[in-house]
Image (cartoon, rainbow, N blue to C red; front, side, top):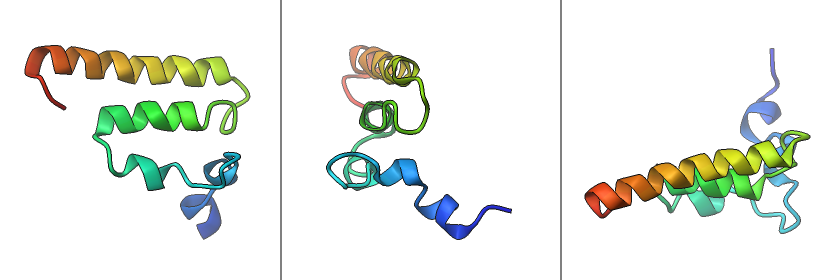
Amino acid sequence: MESADSVNHPAHYTEHPSGVECIQVTEHMGFLLGNAVKYIWRAGLKSQDPVQDLEKAIWYLQRAIEKFKKWGAL
């Protein structure tokens, strides 16, 4: 069973050089843009593959772009 710390504040949440948790920024964005920022923010911190993290960010950005094109808003 995971400890509360692993659930609420895993190490990769606070390893960004700024010391700021990503959620403090992304909770003010929509889902798609927030997730893109999350993957950029934590690239290489959660996993050992920053390229995969950035590819995930691009995936969310592509979805956001398509949504903007179709609906004009997120």
